[in-house]
Length: 193
Image (cartoon, rainbow, N blue to C red; front, side, top):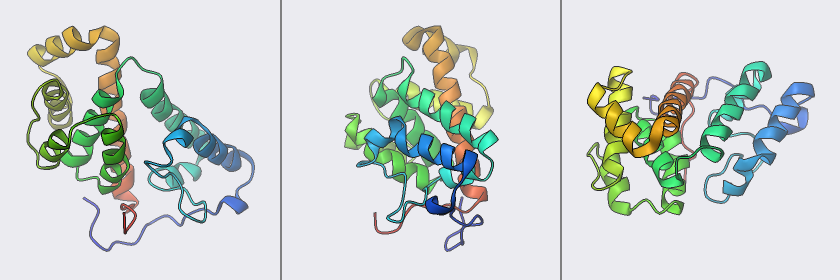
C-alpha cells in the first residue's frame, strides 16, 4: 500500500529533456497502442510527464523498454478478451491495494463492458458472478500462493486453452510487478479523477 501523502520517490522526467534511449522509450510508450486508450486512461499529465509506472521505466530504458513492450503485448496481442484482461488487472489492483492501477484500469474495464456490479464486487474483495468468477479466483490464487492448484489450473486451461492460460498467468505476474514498482516509488493515482 502506498502510504497516504507520501511524495513520489522518483522525480518526473520532463519530456523536453529526454534524449537518446529515454526519448525513444517515451515515444514508444506515448505513441504505441496505449495512445488509443488515452481518453479513458491517461498516460501523461498536462505537461507530458509520464504517469504511473512509466516514469520509472524511463530511468533505465534497457529495462523500461522490455517492460513496456511486455505490457503492450499482454494488453493488445493476446487471445484473452478485453473484459477478462481488465477483470484480472482489477483483481491485482484491489488485492495489492494499487491505487494507480485501479485508477487506470477501472475506466478500461467499463469500456470493455465489465459490469458495475463486477467492478464493485472486486473493489470490495468479493468474487463476482458469472464468467468473471474464474478469472477472479485464478488471480487471487496466483497472488496469494504464487501458483494455481491442479483444479484451478484445469479450469483455466479448459476455459482459455493452454495459450490463454499462459497469457493470464503472465498478465497477473506483470501487473503484480507494476504494483510493486508503484508502491516502492510512491506513485499514487492522480488527484481529482
